[in-house]
Length: 254
Ligand code: ADP
Ligand code: MG
Ligand code: MG
Image 1 (spheres, rainbow, N blue to C red):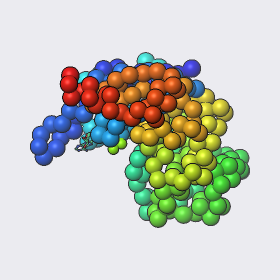
Image 2 (spheres, rainbow, N blue to C red):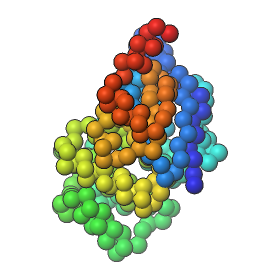
Image 3 (cartoon, protein in one colour):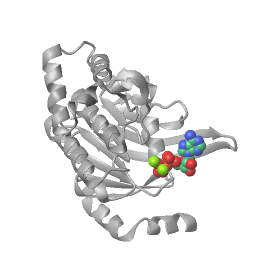
């Protein structure tokens, strides 16, 4: 079982107004095979945490570490992070003009495994996963994210997750903009990946809605750049009823 350990992580970005400190000492331990929900108000730094794990150049790590089984992820190139088994689904995925879903997936799989997948079993696997995600066959020949609806973008992310078989997935606001049917399909995909491959999930969400379909083992409440409270699924129920007010009041007083 792999673990991903984030220790006292401080991250800033450069803005026109100067250096903005966003993450202010994040401590978080993720276990493979478990679903960890990160919940928090807008602007608390959730996406910054995801981008930092992804290696986005804009986010400057001032101190702290992110270790996958003891190895420093922050020292790895973006490619090396993917090869190490870390998968990131961003809140705003980018278009890749001229690259089809089918080619993109095969290229990604080849890069991660270090060799091209055998063609027939690979095509069979893609078909199976696309059917499970209720995706039309023609989807494989479309350009990545070009003109995709919100639901198609999310399905495409989960398709990658199922085919690339990472150890950990960071899903940033995967629930945003999904209707209930799409939310169910996407959630089933995440649950399948957990059951089939022992995926560990960092599920970033502002709302509790997705947690009706993806049941977290642990809930971490994120406020003002750090983890303010941790608990089990009951914490999500409390947030559903009470919102984030108690934490925000706490920060303005303290
Ligand atoms: P969340 O995902 O929890 O809503 P973010 O990580 O997106 O929070 O943002 C945290 C804070 O950092 C916000 O105040 C946001 O405006 C600021 N921030 C994030 N990224 C940048 C950036 N690239 N440039 C300037 N400010 C940023
Ligand atoms: Mg936000
Ligand atoms: Mg965000």
